[in-house]
Image (tube, rainbow, N blue to C red; front, side):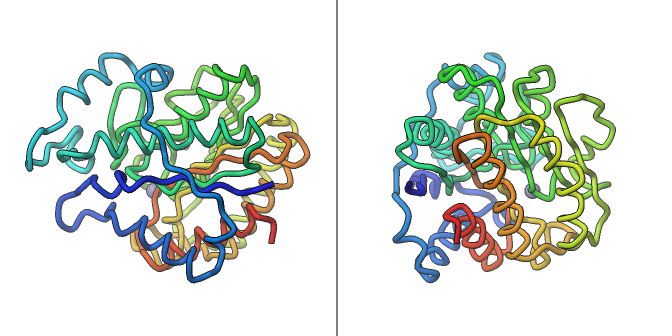
Length: 309
Ligand SMILES: [Zn+2]
């Protein structure tokens, strides 16, 4: 069965202030590496749809969505939704609406068996966005919107959300804190931004804080020890991935030392679980990753593993 790539040129229109790391070139760096590796032609390409208000309201408060829409600038100015790193420009909400619509289409594709697995090459990222708060470059929580779509539209009762971004997925945890239909597994550098997750005590949230300088071997041991047994027991009907690549050793955003092969390894492990329990269904969506070359190469390793090479 085919692997789908969902993206949209509108995601390039979200501009950021100078020296901001979450740049449009991130998507182009991924596209370039997909072409150079020869993987691009193996994928079925889809345009990300705009998310609907109803889909957003499953995971965000109405008052927050109203605030975001009211805040969107109509001209060249840049406004910030939080203390300064989640900014909106003229076309940002369109980009954010495509980024949140992509995992929704991804869920539709895997549930209809049009694709076995999906990667969403979209921005802005989403996993820091809470029910009622923009944060850490994130406006809408893209992966949560997709997971909620799977729960509500397809009546799934077990969706696993995996987050291997170097930062804790505080937004996703906030949204699903009281929903045991979602098993949330996150590895993250600790102590580090956003300074959440290390003390969470909830059965369906598997947070694995790891110290700075964590390398691939330590990451793999943590995943094998903490995530995989819980995933096996949970038997997810669908696996969704908050795929951040800022734990790469070339990424100056963090102090982790993962390499492409580690992203390939964790993806292969998740694919094995998806094969056993979820008919192979995986929907992955881009989160962080700011070293452009390492980002592109890591996504190639991730998609290569989704394909099963
Ligand atoms: Zn991150």
